[in-house]
Image (cartoon, rainbow, N blue to C red; front, side, top):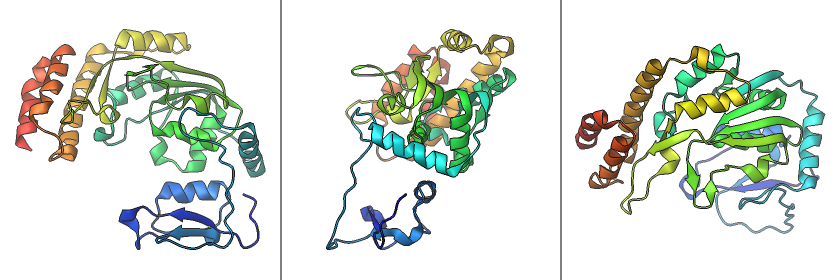
Length: 303
């Protein structure tokens, strides 16, 4: 970052953290991103109350929400930031960015750890970004010829980098949006990557429902169409079939569903009506998992 003499960067604090948050107690990712861009703690001002500013400079926003991609000028600045660091990327043919170790209630693919294990056997480098420093994550992303993400917030890490990424592939978790197949962060990633694609390998979702009977897809657990999954990886040059044991996958998938159900319902208890979860039971039946109905019903009632 190019600092102007005496300038400070101002960040507003969310209401629940007013009077409590300092640089030391701010989220780790906030500090890591600040350091990645060369922002020293001395110029960061956390704003806890309305203030008057004599001279306020507002930088042009290089990246936005709403399907708008980054500006060329912004990508130039990100490229310059990378080049100044003189870092050596971790060179790999294929790296898979997993979310299998996250708490189940955040949502994932059922049987995600099983997929991770099979990918390793097929020669794929599997990483867990939540257990890595930010710099280590970005070195892995920058060095992969093909970078495969389990759809989730880790994708946004690519927005700290400029151009020059390899092929980026996203393994969708949530099936569709109203406008068609989901393409999370596509406008942001496309200008950075050599090629971008999304694999629609999810057959169905299990999700809790709110009072309006709308499924909470962000925290859903996704169920693979395994034949489609294996075919899509084969098209990427990754043959999983010699290592895939369908029974072992199903066993882990069902354990994951039970864990997701237990932890997710505890997280939502008091906010979601038990009666509305009849829709979840219906989804189980449609997915051929009716034998889990007793466990699900007992879990909902028990909490």
